[in-house]
Length: 369
Ligand SMILES: NC(=O)C1=CN([C@@H]2O[C@H](COP(=O)(O)OP(=O)(O)OC[C@H]3O[C@@H](n4cnc5c(N)ncnc54)[C@H](O)[C@@H]3O)[C@@H](O)[C@H]2O)[C@@H](O)CC1
Ligand SMILES: Nc1ncnc2c1ncn2[C@@H]1O[C@H](COP(=O)(O)OP(=O)(O)OP(=O)(O)O)[C@@H](O)[C@H]1O
Ligand SMILES: [Mg+2]
Picture 1 (tube, rainbow, N blue to C red):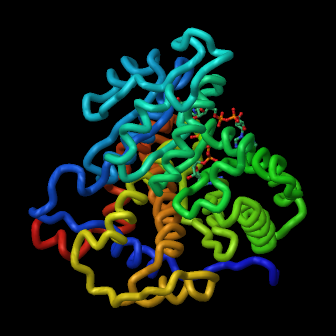
Picture 2 (picture 1 turned 180 degrees about the horizontal axis):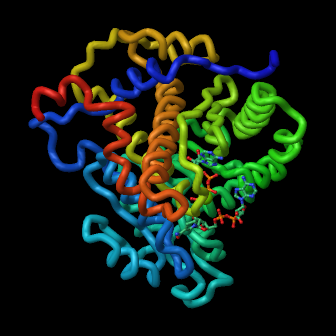
């Protein structure tokens, strides 16, 4: 199919480039430099999702993991792990005086005041659909964008985009992670006609199926002004509208809920590391490259040259691909150990092993281990 823009670089080469954006572990670094990530989510109904996301982020290797959740969820999430910093600062209809006339920017201010100290946000795991919460989170998204803080949007966070696409339109520091149903909702909201996954599966051969799905993902990304999207499924399609990468690392066969949370947490840490790479936090052997990748040939050229520094457009796609690959490997390993009894928490325990197997420590770390 002519109209899709696949970058079909091998996984081995991609993992080599992922290693370039993983900060080495050096004695000179202080607490926080390997990543300060906050998950915004957790409400009366869902406490597992923000926990799985924040733990994946921590176990992949960020230094500080925060959860910003609704008041009723906080003691529960805290009880799962003392490693997480849990802040009960997300308002809901139950915690404001008059839910019909709220001052959303002022309710959002405790969260907004934390933003400058964070490297990345994951918005949506277990957020719920409380009308007050969603209005406040929309304010946080606006401010995060103003401050150029990268974020991942998932689950109920995607509902905010479905209702207000302008919040993210054209923002080049975010990743949307819709499942099949969420992708359909987003496409409908943006007036894009896409064949349903069921129709694609019924009518197309494997190669055509991937092309059709990629075409849909590229269209949605373009409609959102080039936002990076991971369309989750039997393989994950990752696109920024101009270039697309397929993640087809083998996963497990159990489809228990909550696996998407390992993905969002991993992405949070990858985004924090990507920011450190672009801030040149450590010495690199890559040659400077001032050009921003604009199309699939530029992206491929940056990915396939071991010694060339990558531009932010390429590292965003690569971070998305790495998060997807790690999650699928976690699922494969957890499924191998647990079979049909596998649960989301089993993926959490596989994050570090998956990182080591797929990516491995950067060279500079090795001398210190
Ligand atoms: N332990 C937890 O706290 C969990 C909380 N979760 C939260 O639950 C809330 C709702 O998430 P949902 O994902 O249920 O979203 P929705 O409430 O939008 O439901 C999506 C529905 O689509 C179905 N579906 C998914 N993939 C499909 C496919 N390929 N083909 C056909 N149907 C498919 C699912 O079974 C689900 O019923 C979110 O806030 C989410 O973060 C989930 O992440 C699961 C784990
Ligand atoms: N058929 C499949 N084969 C292999 N991996 C899959 C398959 N379907 C989904 N996955 C993987 O599982 C992870 C979660 O995707 P899924 O579609 O279950 O998201 P979700 O519905 O948002 O999950 P959650 O229950 O966490 O909200 C992704 O990393 C995806 O690659
Ligand atoms: Mg989900």
